[in-house]
Image 1 (cartoon, chains in turn orange, yellow):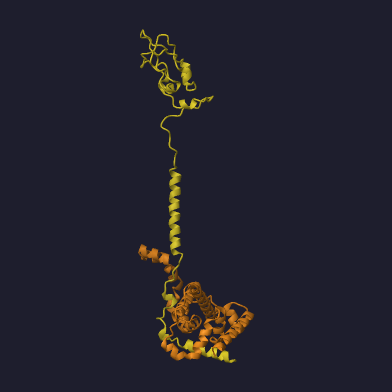
Image 2 (cartoon, helix red, strand yellow):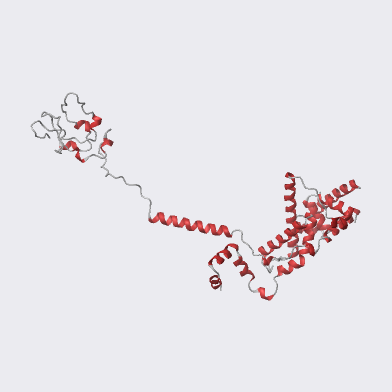
Length: 196
Length: 164
């Protein structure tokens, strides 16, 4: 029982577990652990790579993208537990969380760059080989869009979502998605046309 | 599908496929990470503060802080306060003229009684009770201020009797 569990622990460990909250976590996950891996762990292994790719397209930085995905999974676990019984669509939840976190990261980065000049971008040799000049031009032009425009572009042309799905993911109206996409394409045409 | 859309789709796909599983950090599922409550320390600090506050309240309730008592007893306030009344808030008990222990060598036989027994109350100003003594030449007559609060010693007559 709970009391025996408390008495089994030394006082300092019990106090530390109370402060860190690990007691409540073990209570939450007790029981179903023996029946199989928690749903959130299966989802983590299944969706981690695609979510990191999605985040990389937003923030263009692998380390930041990994942090974003890890934080989104941690938030999902903290809010809904290990078995995700209260989440209707975990995939949509994760995509929306990654998009919001990436947008926040872009805002923070833009704020920081307002005070510190950005360092010259070092393109890895392998990336340069694979990407090619035209792809690099497109990605550079994409980086000059606003965070919202970039979200719409990535969800539409990488994730293949419809306007309605994008609207639900970003919690905006469908009309906003349409106008944002048109505006972003116009900007991209201008940027890429200037370089041709 | 326009040209710009095709280019965009191709560039995004190429960039995304650059990220492979081998490049990622080792997987760390969320359940392996202890869910830390950021308010844990706040809860502990709040509980500590509550205990300390309770201890202070209990201490003050059982041992209230008393104001410091004066060392001398307080004389009841006079019925009709006079301007010099505060001087006699702590009258010396020896102000009674009946004390024969310290006869004055300068007193004369004509000295009247310094004060009647009824005049020894604290309400009477000392100036009124000051005896009309004849001081020797060269001596300074006692000022009213000097007589305040001083023991009004009975005056000794030349024949050894005590007046008053």
